[in-house]
Length: 198
Image (cartoon, rainbow, N blue to C red; front, side):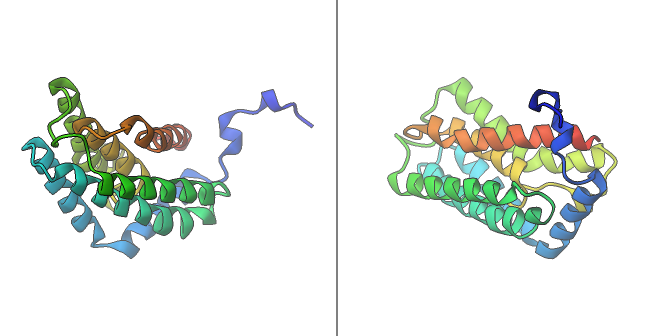
């Protein structure tokens, strides 16, 4: 039996890239046209945050909570679990993030949506825009069909990226704690993407 230190990250991948992208394509087909709704909701939040609307922080937390709960159930629990034994753990983490964001929506941010410093706020808006508008473009950029595009509120990584952006663009109390699960989700997604290849 091999020693644990001889394992590589690729040894833990339990599915082929073709299997994963077929799963994403079928999932996108099953939930369409939810993508339009989630992108529209995200774009509205982005506009509110950019315009420093007082309600932007609470609205963002409420919408993000719903998005995290949806991805926990519809993607991780219902679909990804069929090819990855760790997916139920991911679903639990996403559900926990949804609860934390829902609590943040009730508590509210410190001050208004523009309460973060100008540079921090600008970086947050850029990250949120990347998660909402640029992440889906990775599919055609990597020669995958649009049916395999990863969209905010539907797939984990764009949802996590936009969440980090909205957290930076607003003044949430203890926002560092709210950023832990999204950051871990992005790390897992990046590791998986590196194994799946272009």
